[in-house]
Image 1 (cartoon, rainbow, N blue to C red):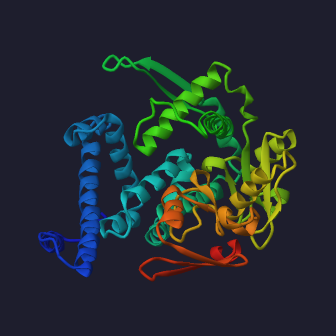
Image 2 (cartoon, rainbow, N blue to C red):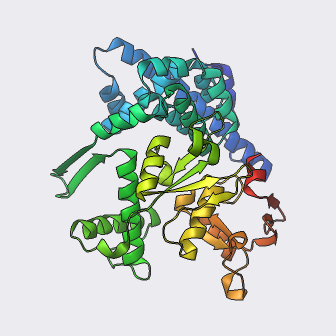
Length: 401
């Protein structure tokens, strides 16, 4: 199937990581070997799971979950991964070699799950191309790659799928007997889902920008989830009505906006939701979606016709030009970044577009408190790290080239 690393080589890897080195090169080699071994072990597990699934009358997810002492949901994910690498053997081989990781496989699974059977069969013939892409791209970049592949085989710009998503909207609520907490699970079509996320985000910003309740957890991710829960209940009670209308920003190139999808189309919405071009056109006319149209050099041609408060307009323009955190090789999406002043505001830096970049929480901290030095020349920037490492970044079109 896709086992490209034999047992002998796996044993060699186990031996190589048996002792912790005391120098940098050895430690880096050990990390790489652990990564390769983990990929091989995962590929072996997926082969076993696939065989189990073929033997059972029903999905083996329950047995897989019990064997791994995990949830039924995680068991289903493992079974789905085994199906993906079974239908795309080259992607499975890349996993076995340690060239990709399970998150690449999960990205592929998320696309294949949404494809119709005939579309899934067409995508399976792209196994070599997907393996090559996954081996050279980060998980975030690979996710965008496979999403484009799905749009290409759908052919109708995803309109039929979008209509099915609207029919598949669900909300389930229950009380957990162990904790007494009210639990829930919902599924919304991209348009309504983006509106909900935007409304909650606006409410969090309005209610908790300057102060946070004493109930907040210490861990940042849990703290954000707690604030989002409080914001949602504020909206339910009608207390968040003054936070402004939910705003969905769609970054789209001029040719696609005018004539529809083409091989180089770029259509990206807030929070990475997938919105058909026809929906963008329709909702833009109604003012519910703000299209940010790009020219051939990646520059923002139009940032919408709603409120032009400087910070909002600049953020829209930056969202059009930067998919992720501006720091090289960082995959944190733009919508989870802070807009950073290259020349700090407190020392006279202007709030103009060329002085602003999206930075994730970790890199924003590094830029302010990590001793990083940033020099600018128009859209070009040079970042010097404390250890002497130098990164150079350019304008959006140069970065994409």
